[in-house]
Image 1: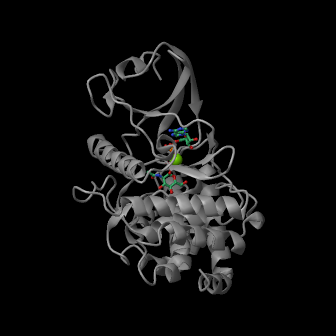
Image 2: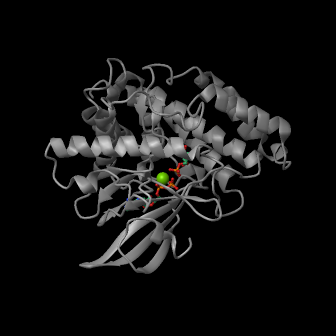
Length: 357
Ligand code: ADP
Ligand code: GN1
Ligand code: MG
């Protein structure tokens, strides 16, 4: 990040420090510390990944609409600390929500939400509940978003049939000669492509988050409460069941997404129950009858979809998801497939638990 980036946004000055945050797989995130009139203030600067998001204006229009709508609703409901419960876009000096620099990179800036943390590996059922409740409430807050449908920022994003076809394309092209080494994974996926008939079409298109994994919620560092939903690039028409499925694949077990010891990857039924209860409580007014009964199917579908996306990216030479070591996308795919096996094994138990939600 260039040191003068902040000068293009309405920020206090001068810049004292920049730190990189390495969590996400897509964008480049930095935290800038600035000297304000009453102490130091931090902001999040994000470079938007334009190979993933071809239409930055559409992404930013969606985020602007969603964050302003949520902010208004929180304020009119008299909720405490609204500025900690929704992202706040900082405007550029020209009055826009994003800035294009001299190199052609696109940047946005958010107010930094202090005393918060994200959880990559969920620590407890209570934490799982809080994360799910926050995503459920977010769905409720978006239900009456005015102004027509949001832009579709990535076409067919959770269309599992298309995702499977993309995997087949990657196998056939085999640009980096990796297909021979992953025959077992390819067979595993082929045996399960029935999942491609699926949850996405069930409730009809409505505003959804579409990247509802556990670490896209900021938790209050002191109380553990789910505070703020982040990573809004894919907020667009979708399915709440996809969102629940993403939550379940990322928070119903306590291993990292790229865990290499597959023996360690198990669904924890009490975590899954906590996620189902939390999501159902937060989204009670927007879930339709029968949705909760599809939560296990949603979890399996999204775990499968994530696995085939990681596998396809491995075959394509790791061009989409950032990797920090060779083979990481293959490890991620294998871990998702192990998790899918575990969902299959526990299916009856999980369904029985859902009857109580
Ligand atoms: P990516 O799209 O790359 O996943 P995210 O938008 O999820 O990027 O942000 C990456 C990380 O940056 C988050 O996991 C979180 O730790 C931190 N972060 C993002 N926005 C904020 C914010 N407004 N306040 C505090 N931390 C933030
Ligand atoms: C990406 O940006 P991040 O890391 O929250 C991806 C999701 C995947 C996820 C897998 C735009 O999310 O779809 O489920 O990685 N985001 C995009 O961890 O493709
Ligand atoms: Mg993220």
